[in-house]
Image (cartoon, rainbow, N blue to C red):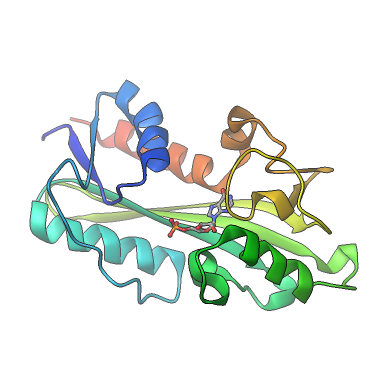
Length: 196
Ligand code: IMP
């Protein structure tokens, strides 16, 4: 078995996070771009798990070697799970400021106990032989009343956990409890248990 895994993304932050956790286990993580694979399949799934599988399968079909893909987003209970799989393009834009404004507006006047929300991350791993495994991580919190904090990205400034927003956590604090951190550690555990 080769130790090379292609990450079906060219996002540098994701690449760094995956490298930090998987390289100590002896895996070499290569971005899709560095592997010379120039595809961007349409994310037509209705769940994070489906979308991460779509991305991983598309790259596996071309590369025929181990692939990881992830998909993530925010689910707000009061909005019946919105923005969900549309998190990155909520309201028809990729502008995080606009996304946060829309969520805050839709929750105007909604009391604390109905502002529950969670980040979800789904990781799909396809091994060299084409077998798919999936790992889901969740990060529970609630939607605040204003943007707070300068760290993180996306919906972090409006996502409150125990009195602070996830944009007020250090990257280490967030990784220890976040959806992506949990899913990644599950993947790492799986890879360790199946290695040679
Ligand atoms: P992806 O790159 O397709 O997984 O897009 C996920 C989208 O969900 C991002 O553009 C963000 O809007 C949102 N998102 C996912 N994880 C986080 C997080 O940890 N903090 C804030 N926003 C997140």
